[in-house]
Image 1 (cartoon, rainbow, N blue to C red):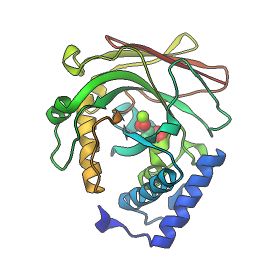
Image 2: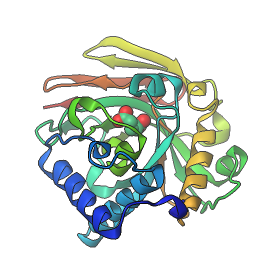
Image 3: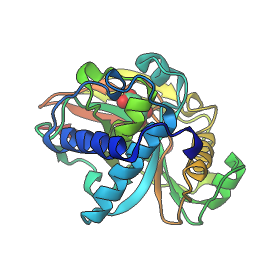
Image 4: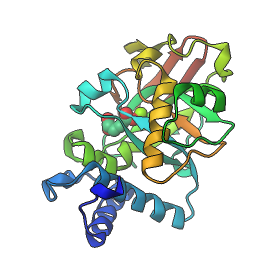
Length: 266
Ligand code: 0L1
Ligand code: MG
């Protein structure tokens, strides 16, 4: 992927500072391709990599990764046709049933996802869903709170990848299960906002099987020169479209076999 980097080192640092500032101050910015229309997906990952380097240098801890844009509903909602990945740090993690402050976010949306916790390291290229299942310790239901830093939640793939695939907060909960205890392909989920169903789906919406999304993520990491370490928390992508939230909202995802995971917004 590094072969397709077109931005200079100075531009990568400049764009990273712009994204980092928008994340820290929760303010919207124009998508990066407005200024750099020739930006490639590799350029987006170069900015994301620099962002990760800066967070880790400040003491944030890398705890895992997320696959994004892995369901048709998400791709249609956002107008893109290729999945992406983003990194997760300890500062983004929130406890189940906690109150999430919207003051630190631009325009949050909630997704319901199947999360994987790995017991063995995985490396691409050529990682398969079978490899993922063999390396998985357990799976659990998760809510991801995404927050694009771009005006109007409008972007293209290079810009959203630079913005760490809109990562903001994540919450694991419900009932953890070993991967062979559940049919991970056919898990149903109902997403509720303030007690009303707002979306529903089945886990096959995520690339046919959520483990396929984790394999895709491992293979993208290989292109970035990274591996997926044992112990990682990995989210496989929203099963339904993402739902916008505001202070006072309560969100719950009711998963077949995996229980319920909830948060509220203040
Ligand atoms: O987790 C996701 O699927 C989000 C990826 C980035 C696109 C978006 O902000 O919806
Ligand atoms: Mg997501």
